[in-house]
Each structure stands twice: as C-alpha cells, then as structure tokens.
Length: 581
Image 1 (cartoon, rainbow, N blue to C red):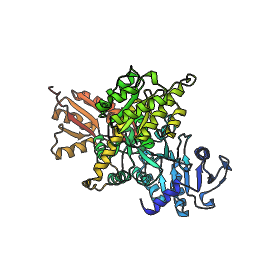
Image 2 (cartoon, rainbow, N blue to C red):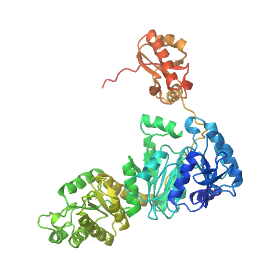
Image 3 (tube, one colour):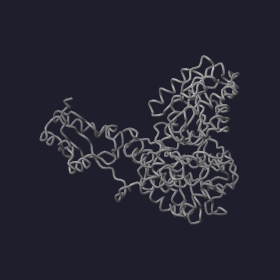
Image 4 (cartoon, rainbow, N blue to C red):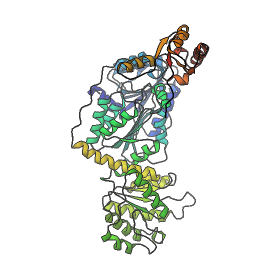
C-alpha cells in the first residue's frame, strides 16, 4: 500500500464526514451509520430524490461542499467508474463500493477500469458489505448490524459479506474493534487490512475469513508483522472442497487454492488455523479477553464428575495437559475440600462448597499452584432466565475463580458445556472481570490449545530467520486451463495421463475407435471450471452410438447450465481400468 493510500484508508476508517451515493441501499447505510452512533457530517447524492434517509440530496458528486473522507457507493455497475474518477479528482479519502457486477461475474475488464479510476483512494470492494469501526462508532455498512466493543477487540476481515454480518449478530460477546467485508479486493486486499490493523493499539487479535489470497509475500510480511507485535491472527480458510472451490470462483472471483499450501503458509507465519465459524469466534474471544497462555498445562474445575471427565477426554485428543496435583500439595488441597471430593485435575470440588466463594477461592488458588498451571478453566452452565434463583451461587464461584487466576497471572475462562448456557448478562460481567466467557467445551479447549501453540510459535519464529519464499512468476489476466491443456502440461512433466485427443463432434466416432472403447467424453471450455455440475462429462461409452448420443446430450445440458460455455471441442479418452485393490 502506498503512503498516500494508507493515509486515505485512515480517513475512510475514521471519517469526519461520509457521502452516501445511491438509492434504497444508501438509505439503509445512512440508518446504520446513525445507529452505530456516528457524530460526523453526512451527505447524500442522488439526482432523482430530494432526500435519502432524512438527508437532503445534492444532484451530483461535484455538488458536494468538500471532498468526503469516506464514501458509501451503491449505484449500478455502469456508473461506478465515472463516480470514482470524480471522487478521486476532488480528493476523497476512501470508498466502500457495495456495487456488484465486476470480476465476480467474469467482467475482469470492468474491474480493471474500476481500479484505474480509483487513483490514490482507499477502496473496499466492489461487491462488499463494507466497514464498521466499533472503536470510533463509524459505519459504512449495507445491512442491519450488531456487535459491541469494550474499547478493544478483534479486527475481522472476511471475503463473505453475509459471514461478516453473521459475526456481528452472533450471541457470543466477541469484543470487536473493526469489521471489514473485503468483497472482490480489487484495490485493497486482506494483506493490506492485516498490515494496517497490526499497528492499531485497540486490536488484540485479527480474524481472517479467507477464500483465496492475492499476494502471498505481502500476506507473509503482514502476518509476521502481527506476530512481532504480539497480535495473534486466526484464519478460517474455506473453499477446500470441490463444490466450495466452485462457489468461491462465482462468489468473489477468487481461486481458493490447495488447502495444504495454505496450512503450510499458516504454520510458517504462526497464523492460527480453525475449521468452523464457532471455533473462529471462540478463539478470537479467548485471545482478546485473556490473551495467550505460555504453555499447555491447564488447571480445570467443575462441580460435576461428568464435566471433569469431558474436559480430560477431549484435552488428551488435542495435546492439552491437565497435570496431576503435586504429591507435596495433595494433603493441603484435600483439607480444603469436602470429604466426598477426590483430589484430581480436572477437579470436581463437589456441591457442599458450591457457591460459597470464601470456601472455593482457596481451593482454586491451591489447585492452580499445585499443578503449575499455564491456564485455568471453570465449567459452569448458567440457568435459563426465569429459572435463575441459583445464579448468585454461580457468580460467587466465578468471582473466586477469577480472583485466584488473576493473582497467579493466569489466563482464565468460564466454560459452558453447551454454548447456549451462558447468557448475555453473564458474558458481559465475566469480560468486565477479566474472564473469557467461553461457549462449548471443545471450543474452549481448542482455543486454549491453539492460543498456547501460537505463543510457542511466536517465540520460535522470533529466534530464527525464515527462508525467503520463492519469487512469484509473472501473472497476467486469469485464464482457466481446459483439461486437455492441463494434461498436456502434466505429460510434459512426466506424469502419466490417459490416452486421448481433442476433437469436434464429427470426429469423435473415428477417434473413439482408434483409441479403443470404452471411452470418456468431456466438453472443453474455459468457462467450465467444474464440468460435472454442467453435465459436461460422460463415462464408460462403449460404441459410436453412445458417443454420439452423449455429445448431443452434453451440448443440451451445458446450454441449460451456461449457454456461453457451449463448445465444439471435446476431449475423448480411454477409460482407465479399475484398480486391483
């Protein structure tokens, strides 16, 4: 990112004024900015309306009284380039481009024109939900949003607008600093946002939803920068399945890439990789509220033998350790417990002392010290509203547990066995007391384990020099290889491929007889990234008639699927014999 664009991104992130350009969508964004609590000036641009969301409209961008720091742009794709040119010329700071109809629909030329028109402005999108600044209460956002901030939190960057919205609406009390829906990433990519947020003192962790990265070396530099500053990065990579990969191409125009390569990149740079949205949120929450433990030794507490067993069983699977109580401390700990309790870790401290903070505090403190813990967790499932006469007992134990952990400098979490058994009031109270309100035993232990691994990885990375990444080759416009071209390349590298040839429909019968039945038939078109879904694959064809019939049916199926993809180029190959074992 150039210095000029970086400065303009700061204007977009913390605007003094926002211009909203468009119609109904812009009205929604105006309402969301107000609801977020934006206190700056707001202007509306629409040549056909007198007002938008209660704001008087000017007819054109050039009628604005001054260059806006931030712009929300929601107009048809055909007018976007001209609007950006005008905004750039007048010195606007940055743009959230909600407008769609660019690379994600295959129009790479339109997206390049958009990039050229942007100049030094910071542009998020196109085809994105926008930006929310929870610290300074500024929003350029396309739909209703939730989320909260205690003055710090996670900066989250997603390639899916709906997923970013889902996170803001989650009932998990994740502290948020910023939310960016990156869309097509035509100008600013996830690498740029990662680099900027690594410098922000309000950011305690960074969350990435990745479909595909555009610049691996820049991502590596930004991720290592975050590492060096002690800011964990958590990544949820999607698009690893065949269907998911196909959806990614149509969604934001990104190529998802091989999952193994991304995992290697994450391991190299210390990025925490998670596999589902719940783990994404819970890991970020743990890191934001209590930070990363220095190791994997955990002190666990429950008021249930079943809960203790659940903790122990899952911890063993993921490499967390519940160390036994040191023999020298066993008798002292036993003296603090009811007679029915058994000294162990995880520890079921039993119901006779439950809810009596003056009695549970010394148990928590002694047990944490006796196992030389790096982190602590207390399992508590709070009663539902209307059935919460006993809630005070839970709160007494939580306060005693938090006091003991705080005195020993341990990151500590209250963990609900079932995610829904931790209500909003309790979650907010726990965060205020410095305890992570975690939802789900597996999610909690995964978060502790991955946070500990991050801390150890950070120490390891700081002690060694990474070998440089291999330089990237020169890349032009995206071109989808057809299967025949891909197999030609593989054959030249010494990889065995089935015998086959490319032919027109009229030539298929002759070639099939020449290479020998049974054969496979596939239509070749650069617009068919996944041929099976289009009906462009036929297998085990045993004679001329079957080949001819398959070609006719294939043309009809592809016409229904995507008319522009219909081609008279077919790949006909011998069928490979079935495996022997």
